[in-house]
Amino acid sequence: MVTTNHLMIMFLSLIFLLHTASVALSDLRPAFYSKTCPEAEFIVRDVMKKVLIREPRSVASVMRFQFHDCFVNGCDASMLLDDTPTMLGEKLALSNINSLRSFEVIDEVKEALEKACPGIVSCADIIIMASRDAVALTGGPNWNVRLGRLDSLTANQEDSNNIMPSPRANASALINLFQNYNLSVKDLVALSGSHSIGKARCFSIMFRLYNQSGTGKPDPAIDPDYRKELNKLCPIDVDQNVTGNLDATPLVFDNQYFKDLVGGRGFLNSDQTLFSFHQTREFVELYSRDQYEFFDAFVEGMLKMGDLQSGRPGEVRKNCRLVNVRPAFASSDS
Ligand code: HEM
Ligand SMILES: *[C@@H]1O[C@H](CO)[C@@H](O)[C@H](O)[C@H]1NC(C)=O
Ligand SMILES: *[C@@H]1O[C@H](CO)[C@@H](O)[C@H](O)[C@H]1NC(C)=O
Ligand SMILES: *[C@@H]1O[C@H](CO)[C@@H](O)[C@H](O)[C@H]1NC(C)=O
Ligand SMILES: *[C@@H]1O[C@H](CO)[C@@H](O)[C@H](O)[C@H]1NC(C)=O
Image 1 (cartoon, rainbow, N blue to C red):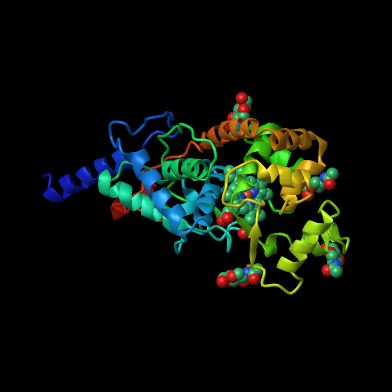
Image 2: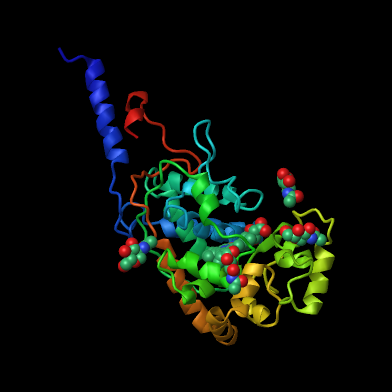
C-alpha cells in the first residue's frame, strides 16, 4: 500500500530532481530573464548605484569577484559560499583571505531580486551583472551581458589556491595562466585594466619595495618618485592591511592605469610587469594612448571570461552564501 509518507517522499524527490539536475552547460544569452524577471538588470543597477554613493570603493571590490569566481571552476558563484563544517570554501583561499570584500553588496542585490522574483536569478549571474554595472557607473563602457548561469553546489579552496595568481607574478606566468582559459595576451592586458579602480594592501607590495626576487633591493621598474610615495605609505614595519590606490584615479574607470604603467607607477608587480615584458608592452602602450581601444578590449575580455563554465550540476541559490537546503533523504544524491 502506498502511504502518504511514500507519496510525500516521491513528491519531494521530484522537486529535488527538478531543482538540481539542471543542465550542466547552460546556453548563456542576453535577456535570459526577460520573461521570468524582467526587472532583474534594473534592480541590480539600482543597488549598485546606492552602493557606489555609500562606499565608492565597494563597486571595485565587487567587480573583482568576477575574476575570482570565473577562474576557479567557472562562473558559478562558488567563491560566495561560506565555509561549512564539511567544506572549506574559497573565501579563505590565499588570494582571497583579508582581501576580497563587499560580499554584503551581493547579499543586498540578492535580497532585492528575491523580493521581486523569488528563486529565479542566480548568484553567478548577479556577479556578472554587478561587475558590468561597477564599470559602467564609474565612467567605463556599458555592455550587454549573457545570462543563464547556475550556482555551484560546492566550492574548492585548494583549486583557488592553485589557480589565482600572486601579485608577484610576472607577465610570462600571467600569459600562461590566461592561455589556459583561451584568453589572449590582449585579453590579459585589457582585463588587468580593471585595476583602474580600487585599492590593494601594503601586504601585496612589501616584497617589491624592500626585497624584489630576494635581492634585498626594490623593484628597479618602479619610478623613483613613486617609490618614495610607496615607501611612505608602506614603511617596513607598517600594518600591512593599510591600502593604496591601484592607479592615480581609483574611483574612475579610465585608461589612467596604463599611463601609470608607462610611467613606472604601477602599484602591483603583476601590473608593472605588463610594461616590462615586450609581448604585453605593446598593448599597454596602445591602451595608454587610446581609451576606446582599451574599453573595446576590456568588454571583449569580460564577455569571454564570463562564459567560463565548469559543466557541473548547479542550482539557483536562495542565499548566495549557502547551497539550498535539501530533504535529508536526497542528500546522498548530490
Ligand atoms: C592579471 C592578474 C591579476 C592579478 C595578479 C591581480 C591581483 C590583485 C591583487 C593582489 C589585488 C589587491 C589585493 C590586496 O592587496 O588585498 C587586486 C585587486 C583588484 N583586482 Fe586584481 N588581479 C589580476 C587581475 C584582475 C582582473 C582580471 C580583475 C577583474 C576583471 C581584477 C580586479 C581587481 C579589482 C577591481 C581590485 C581592487 C579591489 C578592491 O578595491 O577591493 N583583477 N588584484
Ligand atoms: C616568471 O615567473 C616564473 C614563475 O614564477 C619564473 O619561472 C620565470 O623565471 C619568470 N620569468 C622571468 C623572465 O623573470
Ligand atoms: C579552449 O579552446 C580549446 C580549443 O577550442 C577547447 O578545447 C578548450 O576546451 C577551451 N578551453 C576553455 C577553458 O574554454
Ligand atoms: C630577501 O629575500 C631572500 C630570499 O627570499 C632572503 O634570503 C633574504 O633574507 C631577504 N632579505 C631581506 C633583507 O629581508
Ligand atoms: C589584517 O587584518 C586581519 C583581520 O583584521 C588580520 O587577521 C591579519 O593578520 C591582518 N593582516 C596583515 C597582513 O597584517
